[in-house]
Every structure is written in C-alpha cells, then in structure tokens.
Image (cartoon, rainbow, N blue to C red; front, side):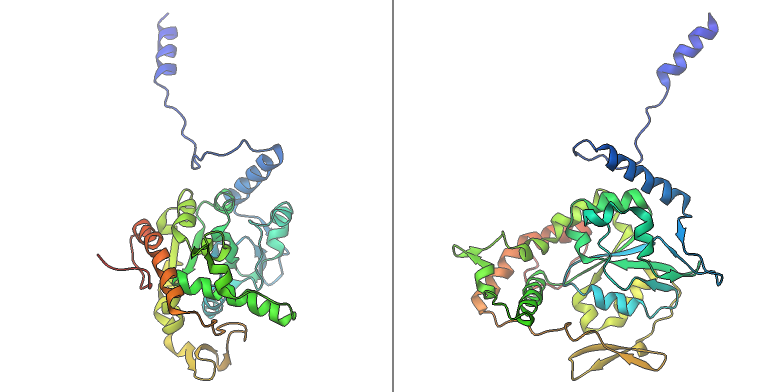
Length: 320
C-alpha cells in the first residue's frame, strides 16, 4: 500500500516537459515537413554531417554563420571583406536553401554540396539576403542549428529602397526593356505605396520580430551598412569579435578607390574591388518625395531601435 501511495505522489508532482523550441501559432505540419524538421534537428545535434572529405582534411560542411540580409544592404561587400580572414570559408553564390521550396526539398545533402571546402578550424559562411524578409526561414534555420551565429547588415531604409529600385531598373535596361520611374512605384494616391515590395523590405522591425522568436539578440550581429561603406575596418573588427575570430583583418586591407568612389580590398599584395554593378548612382528623386519617404519610416525605425536596443544614423530618426 505504501509503495502504491508513493507512486501516486510521484506522478502528481512530476514536472511538465517544456518544449525546447519556441512556441508559435502555425498550421499543423504535413508529414513531409515533420520529417524534414526532424532530419534537420538530428543533423545539427550530431554536427557530423559532412560531404566529400579530402585527404588534406578539408570537406564540405554545414555553415556555422549565415548572412541573412538585408537585400541591397551591403551583403556582398560584407562577405568579401569577411573573406579576408584566413579562418573564413565563404560560399560564392547565394544558396536560397531556406527560402526557395524547390531547394529546401532537396535536403541537407544538397545544401552542403553548395558549400565551399573548409578545414576544421574554419567557419563556413553563406549569404542569402532574402532570408531576412522570408517568414519561413527563421524557424527552418533554428531547426537546423539553434546555435547559429547570424549576420545582418542594414542601411538607411530610404536609401535601401532607392538601391532596390536601381538594381531592378538596370536589370531591365540591360535587357532593353522599359521600366517605370521610381515615382510610379513609391507613390499611390498621393501617399507612400505600402504595397511596393521594396518598402516592405525596409520595415526592419517586422522582420526582426520574426527572427527574435527563434534566436536571442546576442546571436544576431547587426552591421551598420552605412558605416561599412564610409569606414569599413571598425565594422569588420566588430564582426571578428562576434564570430570569436582572432584579429587578422587590419586597416591596411582597405583602400579608397577615388575612381569608383568606394573602398576596395587589398589582400597579400592583390587588390580587388566589388563588381561594377555595386555602388551604382541612384536615380534623381525630388526633395518632397524623399521627405515623404523619410517621414514614412520614422515610426517603423523607432520600433526597430527599441527592439534591438540601439539607434542608427538614419534620416527618418529624430531624437526626442
């Protein structure tokens, strides 16, 4: 009888098991999604999912760091500058594993096949700027690796919108296709066109809230894209510290190219600049339109500053 009572007490006081992953309101997963999630979790826990191991000790492996965005924020410049460090192995192309369904269905073996060969002491990095604004991506990255170190480079939202338009405009020009003026995209019925995708991509606080459901803020390092353009070395130093890299990159690795109008890189005597498609001049925009854009981003930017606990020198922010 005493044994029976003891067992009953233990059942009553047994603590409730708390899920290890964030609780979110979502639709029930399909069986294929559930299988994929479990595969990702098992892989990240084992940390031994490697492909094509060479005799020299290098292999393709899952990234430990991802540059998640933002589009036209300076992600290519950040990756090129970070690649100056000998302990960084960077994927050359944007992989789009977590945001493109066709790629995601290919599974982890395909994802790893897109990675560079690296040595055990190196950090593998991939960048896909669309990750930051894709709703499904944070959970998928979390399921693969809860300890992932994320890099996010942001710039003045208004300037980012103009760069976004400029890229698409030049793409159309190269194909000899007409493209509407930026005013036609930015303004609708006399107000800022909130349906324009470039505007949505600059509402940083909305997308950041989604990432913070899965990753703590100390796992997301925000690079100031405007400062990276003007003076890259201090920003790269901060990235080195965030990734716990030894300080190998120094000021002599950067030099200002007066012809191009931005900083280029110097590595072991070799000099290189970003592709000519980077740093293009923005279209001329009337002052009233810029002011309207700045005013629109004022409140969203304040929300973002409060969310991340820091401010940025953006046009739309006015200190109270």
